Image 1 (cartoon, helix red, strand yellow):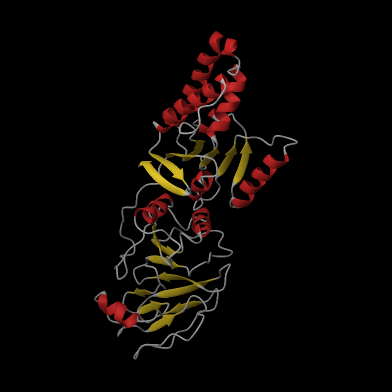
Image 2 (cartoon, helix red, strand yellow):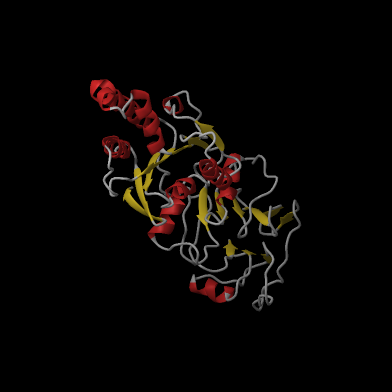
Length: 370
């Protein structure tokens, strides 16, 4: 929960030693009397943790080395990108779990032999660690991903569940017994998500958060570079610096090819639909009253319909960002009001095709659907 983590494996192996471990085990209906090995995964600051009577002294396995227990368990130590050690534990019957300490990701983990049955790690603090495991094939569709090392910076209740579900993970109460290899129902990552919000509401951060546990995301920037606009360039740079290094970027408003059947299967993050609408309205001459009445309105509706149809049919995971402007001041010009109205229509049509719709206000995400 919101404290240090320890795992008792088959009553014989204890990964990490937390204060009050014996009492915690007893509350969960277990005894530490059968523990034959205690392994630490990360350096402990402050006073040494008291070792309960009867437990062996804790130790650590050197990176790359393997430890065989008389019970048939095998423990392999994995190198990390932060101080500490990750442990791959194989059971007597072949099931495998991976345990990573807080704030760490596996280093040099390029290709797994096969997906682990269970992975226990810091999903919220290091979502990129989960992304690396997915990229290497160590986490597959059937891997049970359990989030631990949750601290007080993480919102409780539904907000935590929502963040974990977006990563394909779950959290469990203290004392829970987990069966490695058994199927656990975790909410599917929504195929299509729309994130709405006002200026500086945190909508882009929320959209990025929903895909940060996945590798090889294609980030589609619809705003372009706007040559000569220094302030806009700074905005673009901030967005780029915030994104994971493994993500790719495409600066385009041509979204239909990215949604088609022959498109790259990587998850797609579109930021944002409001800038796409500006581009589309430019193309049809929607800012001019005469051109709007003479066919511009019909042409724009056709473009929006094509985009919505593409979202409906796509096989990709799509997260899109858009501005919510309908609650603000009524624009003073006819073209401004036209843009506001058309963006409202676009948002409503796009949301109609999404399994999840979020409204971000003051950095807080409110689930409107899903």
